[in-house]
Length: 251
Ligand SMILES: Cc1cc2nc3c(=O)[nH]c(=O)nc-3n(C[C@H](O)[C@H](O)[C@H](O)COP(=O)(O)O)c2cc1C
Image 1 (cartoon, rainbow, N blue to C red):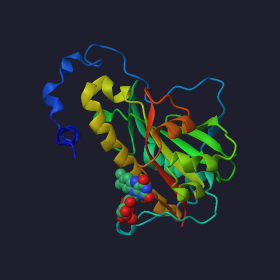
Image 2 (image 1 turned 120 degrees about the vertical axis):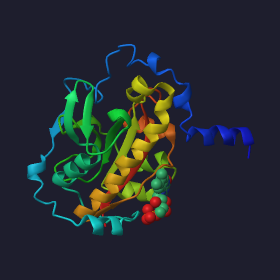
Image 3 (image 1 turned 90 degrees about the vertical axis):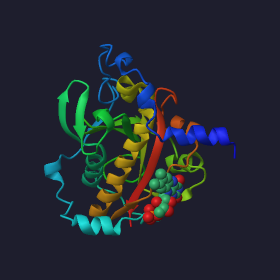
């Protein structure tokens, strides 16, 4: 292994950048307005209301100790749909808004460095009650789904985009998380990227815990074809790109 290359990548995990970044020169310090807390959407885009928290009658009480003890990755799913209530619950658990503090700042059900939340959630949906198959984006502020596209044979496109991991295409829903790095760079400049990766871990861990409450399972996936996956969810690969995904289905 190339020693210099190893050092560069090992150093990525250190917090040394904090000593070199001139935080007085970040966009935030220079008075640039914060980017929006969620990616804007075209005003004529089709949007679907998700059931609010009070409507999750199907989500039972669950013992957190048991949930943590039972957490594991699942790669085999029953051929069953998810209800819209169940999906709404999982979206809330992973990215739900707790409180909008002021323009550009919202607190969510997961932690994030500087509360910047530089993550967007896309869903590859093949079997959710009441929804046609397609690719959707979660709008956390509105607690709605936005229809992104409805490609033919969605499940078939997922397999090459995940480097042949066929089990992912059998899930009724695949969560795909992108990052919009500028949302974090606005405050942290080049110290943004390490904490974006950390943030993504919190999002997926909440998904692992939440799926237990609906008799479902998930598996974190970091191995995928970057370009194919970016193209599938319709992001440019520069200002926004996929960083993590997780199929969800009943187990
Ligand atoms: C960052 C990360 C990336 C992962 N990527 C994949 C993946 O691409 N494919 C896969 O099948 N499992 C993937 N996994 C799941 C791990 O293989 C799994 O967590 C590990 O084998 C331990 O099993 P457990 O989660 O059941 O405890 C990933 C897990 C993490 C945390």
